[in-house]
Length: 407
Image 1 (tube, rainbow, N blue to C red):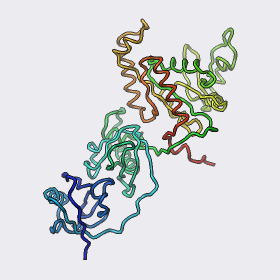
Image 2: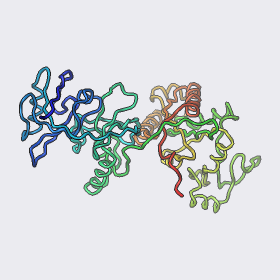
Image 3: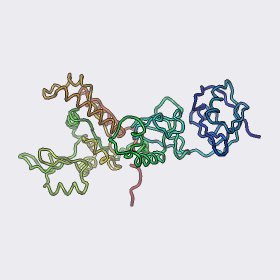
Image 4: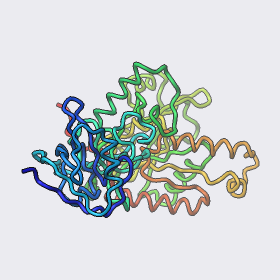
């Protein structure tokens, strides 16, 4: 005798997601199966239905051979209690180990033709923290957003599904510039990774301080914030000594203002990947080396650097464990009131805002904190608070920073 599962219809059904259950039809046999049970939904809370259960009857009506849409319509029209007659599937053990991920792309299920049930999908944005609660489906995981009021989960592409769609797009689409809007072309971008695994990290008091990286558009005041922070407390905060090929000036001391080197030495350091960032200014080369940063950290001081966003990957390592702060400008109208430099024109403020939007859209998944540099004094306090938070409180950081080094 097939077991009878009784579920009270307390939640409203919709036309594609049946009280937290999706169904599928075996076209060869005509049987209807429970495809998945959405965590946190009505069926999941009842504990009576499981993925793989064969649905035999709904309120006395046999469903074998019916299309899923017809079964759904029957459920939509039902009132009160709904009686399912099912043949249970052997339950598969769920993953007991929690998995947490940081979204590295924007994703919208309504714009993804591959998702089996768009209404069961969950949209997310770059930088969102996700808890993966079910990985049993090789293509579609169930996840919920951390710190979300909703207990119900949604479907997101698994890493396998994401890589499959990347390969499909790579072969089928011509090259297109990056798009920052949500949709298939952006979320399955061939150069992107859908998520990175993260772990909760509490810095030990004996560990070196975390590197503080400031990022922002030119003109927003990143360098001034860094300079003021170091000036206020030079015993705690310090910048690395940069390398340069320019000549040493009167009163300068090698290793104090700069590390002065020849062009040949500088080129050697570039080839051997010694720099986190380097560039040319007035015909001379300048660079920030990894060793200079590590020297500051090894001395127990908090190293604060400003960095171009395209160099983020050079510092996101297990050695430095950077805390990345994005400095965002206020509105152009506010900048006109607070920026008294006569060299600033209205178009400059518009360009700063546009550069900020572009920078944030492309790189916000790497930002641990965002500060709006409206009033410089207030921004310095916000920066101080953020740095203290980074050093003393638990943070989500890439799990790869805990992986053992390859021998």
